[in-house]
Length: 283
Image 1 (cartoon, rainbow, N blue to C red):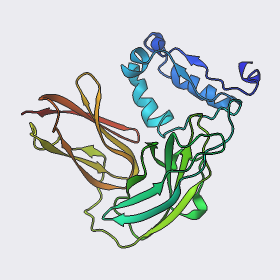
Image 2: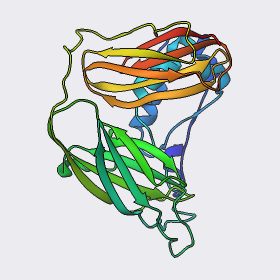
Image 3: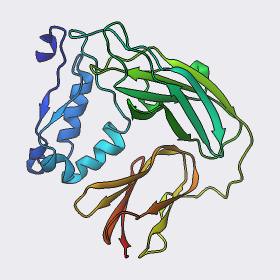
């Protein structure tokens, strides 16, 4: 009924995450998400509360959101009843290869006729011009601030591939600009060790460490992966990777420069696999 009474506005049903531990079925909250998504018009969910119901991960619900329902980034919906004029796109978008990265650069757009310009930028990557679809969240590589005029994208180890990059500007009411597009062909094949037969995460080495340590992730198949470091209060300290990785062994270095001595956690989410380990910074 509410979904039929929207009058051109958004609908975000409120859902009681704080009650998850009292529900008999662990699938109750996931089923509510599925109901939302199968009903025409709801734009998302409002979860109450964040600290009790989400961040405390009752019955693994937070993990389920990250690896399943909220696996890919989402852009905030525009509010056309307030403002439907999109900003102008960034200009002079260019791509160049640097080792196993693609460096993107662009210039900020001038103000649109309503005086708005970019509040943030969205970077998309596609493997062929024929696959460009800005409604596919899997293509979003990053969302950057209005001050940014570049982005470094890691493409891993692969054979000759043509990438099509799209960068859009988004204004304060989340209207998205037309696309600025560029293509780049990555040639050559980097050497690669045997592909792991299963997913695993090595204990960081050295441990304890000062000031840096190495973390290795072994992927049997390509999958969207994140590697983040937290302190013992659950505050995010660093994001070492966030994106699609190919099968193989991936090595990352974490530096504790500027951090105090103590125990930190690193957490790897690769598809449905979630691994957390402790490491000690000892200065």
